[in-house]
Image (cartoon, rainbow, N blue to C red):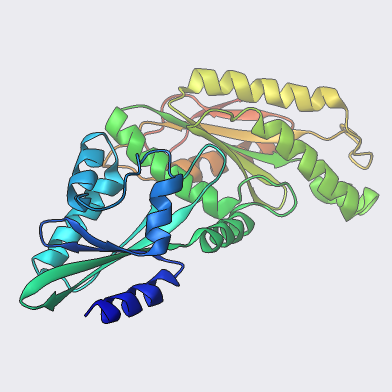
Length: 319
């Protein structure tokens, strides 16, 4: 029996995953080398060996201290113990001030000599998570400007919509278009045109610097800015300042006879989200106002006269 135990322990000690076996009460009965080393290096655990440590109790106490992952782990372990499910998986972060790490926890159970045991393993998935983050970044950031793209903006708008309904706060949304951008590309080439887009993206992003704000490239020569919890007056002042600041830079666009500089047209709408409206209403209104600003001669700001309540827009033009 001892020889068999030593053999199994030697095999499990070669595993890179941390493996621990507990009984149905949560008391640790076995830990492999990888798991044992965790206790020696983690600052949150006062290592004194695993004998006598109750895994479930540690999770419960961490949960009471505010660790939501520990609560989920304890709940999942108990479900497997009660045979409510065969396996339980939990992906969780385990970061330190110097490193970011993620692990995948797996729980299963077996019966030996009429006694239940649960096997809990923790596999380091940090490399996988970092690779996923890099892919996510590539698919969420506009490749020219380096700011969020249209897809990410749509997801952010949906999140802010739910929050605004709960908090009963407004959302202001601006659609911004570069006037006569095709002439810039035709005159100076796409390389310089892309440089204009990057510079403008950087300038506009600085106007959306709160957690509830976002600036994104919406496509082509258009950008969009969402200002969460911001009423029309504040957003109006900010957009008018942007309009005038861009004009003051006097970035050349020589083929435009009326104003041979880079200018913007902006449509700005405000709404209080509720169960009777939807994000598309706000996007549609801002888009209509952007076209109204262009129709009014460009280099201008079109703003709804009141809080958006329908698709029938009354608006004013500012420059």
